[in-house]
Length: 107
Image 1 (spheres, rainbow, N blue to C red):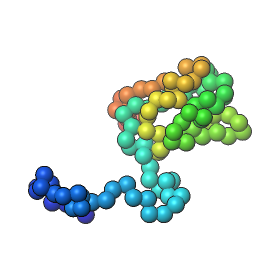
Image 2: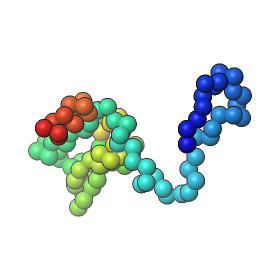
Image 3: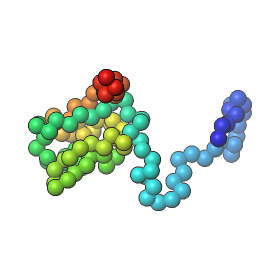
Image 4: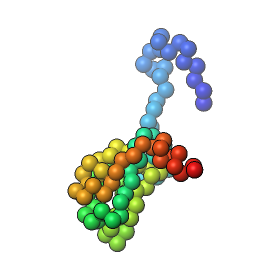
């Protein structure tokens, strides 16, 4: 849908479209939010002691755990807030520039 917003300064409140409507429960897995990220977390397995502090603090449930160990960070949903890196007691997560990470991937 394309909106003609050329006259938006004159719109009343009821002309603005509704946004952020969740029409059905449990649909958050359909909406991948990793594309919003400007910083990417990089997990260092050697430094990690699997305390799962990152799991506790991650607001996006992007820390994947398997057998009580931190397995990976789900980049499809990680928004790059950096809370995991900030809270990690062993500095096992580093935040790097997303564009540089993408450039490295595409080499």
